[in-house]
Length: 587
Image (cartoon, rainbow, N blue to C red):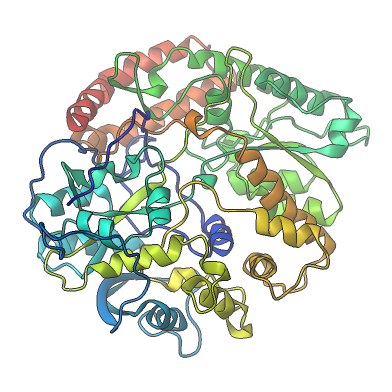
């Protein structure tokens, strides 16, 4: 018996956002398991596609699961291998935080927890720097020398499936996966499995990331909002009005013209500070993204003439002095310095913004920030944000590996919602390990060879209880999570009052805002494929052309009508060919 996964009518879009290290750490300590397998950066132009969508058609692999085809399948969730089994992997070493003492990439306390709680003995077939991981996977595929479990992009899965290198996991999923875990992985109508499904056969488990990293929050200085006598904006037009007020009405009360309204940096199309895209999304536009067109074909969002309206908004803000006149020469962190210097009181961006140095400075000074949803433009009924597809890599099992159920054991342990309150469980033991003095402040999940996050949201309710109840039992897991989070963020076990507020704004304010965004409004990429031939040849040229055009229009060096010329030139320089190639690959 095999499970046939049906895929809904979601407008599936692309895996694009590179989540910076700290964000991954925050998600890790709250969910007690996070991140995805390392993968090759397959970005082209400004659209970081990373998978091949080929969810239909017959299976073209002869790999068979360990469960006999005619055997009755009884769901018995498996959490530990007994006796333990060796699992070889390609291990990207943690080169950011590193290791200490006798801890190494191949012999460390995290590997010990895996063996003790899951019966999985990791053997590093290859150890490599994170940035070289994708190349090692390619070499393993080319030489037909895969480890027992391999993490790779879905484009690489396409090649492995085509060459019969992977096992069909569908029966193992039926027999051993916890139904609650499967329900999580089936989020978005089963779309997470689409790139690695052929007919009824499933060749990979999505290495899920959390959509929190793609969702954006509006941060507003409370004292500035009160100073200009405004309410929290409920439309993007009101956001723009507030930006003007923060520029012209001396919100800091020092009598000087030293504030700006809307932060933006010089990397307008591919920055962590993606103000241009946020404003565009609020009005129903999706620059730099491949999206589904009106007739079902894939189109490039940057070629929508309606984006001239967004550029007109930013151009007017620049002309009014609400945008830093030197924004072109500044990057994300330099703009963040302006927050710390009291130049900005409005920020549209990531949920973990308070841990950036500039905003953190304001918390230390006692500044209060309001968190609110990104509002839609008046022309739109709701805000529909572009969201990075929460599976930018997959885990597969070598076709002749004798313990393929090990992969199911691993994902069961990572995504089990009750494990944190279960003594001796993987999550519980990892939490206790992180509370030991020698390991505090270290993102231990980076030492693991396999990682998952809940693809929807992490549960902030334990944090809420810990923060709201000063008498909360410190032995309870939620409080331990709370303290472990501080350990990760700042290396402190006894946070200052301002840090309590900072943490609360992140995990109660910002995450609470994100939970107000209906998941059915998420916009994903319509293309999962690897860069096409023309993308690779012309992508950087087209990306540069787009960035320069946008900057010239915002700064007044070109008329808004210049965007029409950009569209035409983009198509002539290879954009039209790219769109044809993308549609051909998707079909």
